[in-house]
Image 1 (cartoon, rainbow, N blue to C red):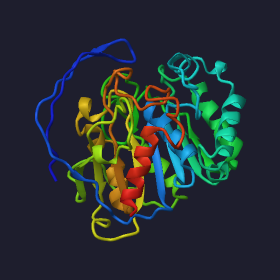
Image 2 (cartoon, rainbow, N blue to C red):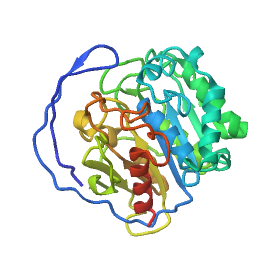
Image 3 (tube, helix red, strand yellow):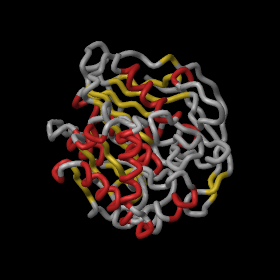
Image 4 (cartoon, rainbow, N blue to C red):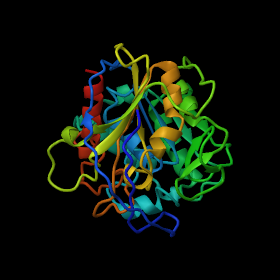
Length: 341
């Protein structure tokens, strides 16, 4: 299905001090997100940068519903501890300032208070972690801190890492984007490395078939959906866009029991900046089509306190941002509940 074209422009600062314009025109009337009777025991998440932080937050907070996560260029759960300054310092550039035991203590206390699911669920999950050799935005040590955090709870075999690709700070693909070492918009790099397949194959215990090719028209159903009706009641700005994307493989359009994977874009990669580019070209849909995995791309946009359209990993919504009651996390849980119903 051809998605509606919306072109956008606003001046913002990027993570590298550059400037980028976008502007918007056009309109759309997206349908409500459908119910596909996906398997509620086969739900996973992944993301890059702020989306990577969102993925680990979702995996930890809703670990009874999430079986695994794939995280590119992000650090441990609760790393920013509600402070943007800590986020920009320790959780991006200075990993030696991360006190891992504090984050573990917060996790355990939150689980005891039932603000997040029991850590025994997280311990039985799987995670895949990526740090590019040439990433200057998120220090390798930050991702290693996440690795150590995961290994505190999970068996060593459940944690897989890839630290050997000469990639800049970006979403990493087999076939699409800028030169692998690039660190500039759209932050999608062609490294001849299929990270969506590798991370999902690890999560789903090596059972997936690798796509024969990437790119070109896909046979499944790629559509927009109305995000607004899934946002929980909340006072203040959620930074959630009104529209998200979903790819439903041909084997899942009318057949129940498919898997579900949620993809979190990074800063400056949402619909208001890239339109459908991220959802169409990062390689997730090809893996989904080959293996009957529904792929959902929820979207955030720029807002006061969040000018670059990042997922909330430091607390710009409220202090509950990384707990089950956090508005963005609860919104994602509503997506999962709808697609699996």
